[in-house]
Picture (cartoon, rainbow, N blue to C red):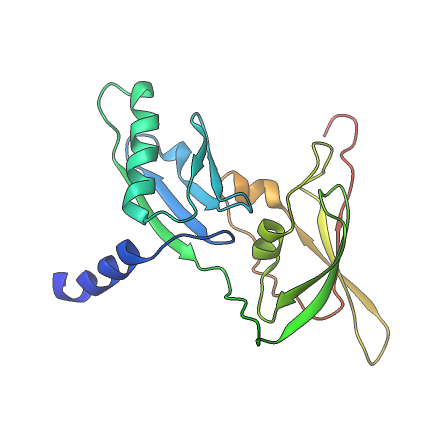
Length: 188
C-alpha cells in the first residue's frame, strides 16, 4: 500500500500552489476546521481562527507547517493538520482556447473575462478578484442561454457553504455564461 501512495505524496509535495487551486484541509483535533481552501487571486487562503496564509508559490508542506504553527496557540499541543491539493486550477497558456464569460453584481471586477475552456465556477471566482462586502455569496447564479432554443437556465451556487467546508456542484462554465452575484438582503 505504501508503494502505491508514495508517488502521489511525492507529486503533492513537489507541486507549487497557485491561484485558483483548491486545497483540502483536515485538523484531527478539531473537525469543525475541516474545509476546502480556495487559493485567492492574491495568492492567499483564508483559514478559520488564523486569518490569511500565503499559499501561492509554496509547497503543500510549507503551507501545512504555516497553518499548523498559526493554529498551535489555540490548542494544548500542536494540532495535526493534513493538507492536500483537492483541485488544480486550469492552466491558461497563450495559445490555449479561451471562452468569454461575464460577471456582474457584488464583485470587485465586473465585466467580460476570457477564461480557459474547462474552468469551473469556483476557479473562475478565484480568478475574478473576489466579492464586495455586500455580496450574497449564498445566492450566486450562473445563467446559461441555450443557443438553439434561447431558453435561459439558471444554476444556483452557494459559495458560503464551500467556504464553510461543504461541497457544491462543480459547474463547468460555458461560452457566454453570465455569473450574477446579488446584493445581500438586510439580515442575510
